[in-house]
Length: 84
View 1 (cartoon, rainbow, N blue to C red):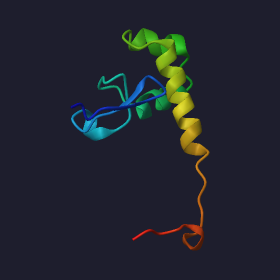
View 2 (tube, rainbow, N blue to C red; view 1 turned 120 degrees about the vertical axis):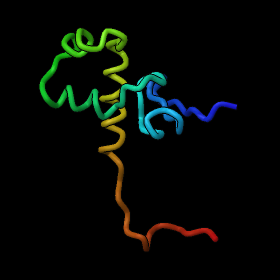
View 3 (cartoon, rainbow, N blue to C red; view 1 turned 120 degrees about the horizontal axis):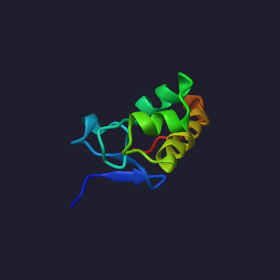
View 4 (tube, one colour; view 1 turned 180 degrees about the vertical axis):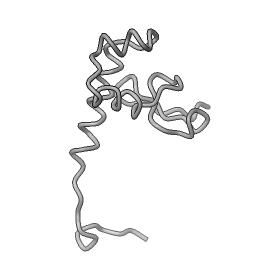
Protein backbone atom coordinates (compact mmCIF):
# COMPACT_ATOMS: atom_id res chain seq x y z
CA UNK A 1 0.00 0.00 0.00
CA UNK A 2 1.45 3.36 -1.05
CA UNK A 3 1.93 6.07 1.54
CA UNK A 4 2.03 8.77 -1.13
CA UNK A 5 -0.73 11.36 -1.10
CA UNK A 6 -1.39 13.52 -4.16
CA UNK A 7 -3.18 16.84 -4.56
CA UNK A 8 -3.70 18.98 -7.64
CA UNK A 9 -2.69 15.86 -9.64
CA UNK A 10 0.97 16.87 -9.35
CA UNK A 11 1.83 17.69 -5.75
CA UNK A 12 2.81 14.60 -3.77
CA UNK A 13 3.60 13.90 -0.14
CA UNK A 14 5.61 10.77 0.65
CA UNK A 15 7.40 10.20 3.95
CA UNK A 16 10.20 8.46 2.02
CA UNK A 17 10.85 11.43 -0.30
CA UNK A 18 12.25 14.69 1.08
CA UNK A 19 10.92 13.88 4.54
CA UNK A 20 7.30 14.05 3.38
CA UNK A 21 7.54 17.65 2.14
CA UNK A 22 5.35 18.71 -0.78
CA UNK A 23 7.10 17.57 -3.98
CA UNK A 24 6.41 17.53 -7.70
CA UNK A 25 5.14 14.18 -9.00
CA UNK A 26 7.16 12.15 -6.49
CA UNK A 27 10.45 13.66 -7.60
CA UNK A 28 12.95 15.24 -5.24
CA UNK A 29 11.88 18.69 -6.39
CA UNK A 30 10.01 20.46 -3.61
CA UNK A 31 7.17 22.88 -4.08
CA UNK A 32 9.11 25.35 -1.95
CA UNK A 33 12.01 25.26 -4.42
CA UNK A 34 9.72 26.01 -7.35
CA UNK A 35 7.98 28.80 -5.44
CA UNK A 36 11.35 30.26 -4.49
CA UNK A 37 12.38 30.31 -8.15
CA UNK A 38 9.14 32.08 -9.10
CA UNK A 39 9.56 34.53 -6.22
CA UNK A 40 13.05 35.30 -7.50
CA UNK A 41 11.55 36.28 -10.84
CA UNK A 42 12.40 33.22 -12.90
CA UNK A 43 9.92 32.67 -15.70
CA UNK A 44 8.26 29.34 -16.33
CA UNK A 45 10.52 28.97 -19.35
CA UNK A 46 13.63 29.67 -17.23
CA UNK A 47 12.56 27.11 -14.63
CA UNK A 48 11.90 24.44 -17.24
CA UNK A 49 15.25 25.18 -18.88
CA UNK A 50 16.99 24.72 -15.49
CA UNK A 51 14.87 21.67 -14.59
CA UNK A 52 13.89 20.04 -17.92
CA UNK A 53 11.94 17.23 -16.23
CA UNK A 54 9.42 19.79 -14.93
CA UNK A 55 6.37 20.78 -16.94
CA UNK A 56 4.37 23.98 -17.08
CA UNK A 57 1.52 22.26 -15.25
CA UNK A 58 3.88 21.37 -12.39
CA UNK A 59 4.68 25.03 -11.82
CA UNK A 60 1.01 26.01 -12.04
CA UNK A 61 0.16 23.32 -9.48
CA UNK A 62 2.78 24.79 -7.11
CA UNK A 63 1.17 28.20 -7.44
CA UNK A 64 -2.30 26.77 -6.82
CA UNK A 65 -1.00 24.99 -3.72
CA UNK A 66 0.56 28.24 -2.46
CA UNK A 67 -2.77 30.04 -2.92
CA UNK A 68 -4.50 27.27 -0.98
CA UNK A 69 -2.02 27.61 1.90
CA UNK A 70 -2.18 31.40 1.90
CA UNK A 71 -5.97 31.37 2.05
CA UNK A 72 -6.06 29.23 5.19
CA UNK A 73 -8.16 30.78 7.90
CA UNK A 74 -6.98 31.06 11.47
CA UNK A 75 -9.70 30.68 14.07
CA UNK A 76 -9.49 31.21 17.82
CA UNK A 77 -9.39 28.00 19.87
CA UNK A 78 -12.72 28.89 21.47
CA UNK A 79 -14.52 28.40 18.13
CA UNK A 80 -13.01 25.00 17.37
CA UNK A 81 -14.94 21.97 18.57
CA UNK A 82 -12.60 19.53 20.31
CA UNK A 83 -13.67 15.92 20.20
CA UNK A 84 -12.37 13.52 22.79
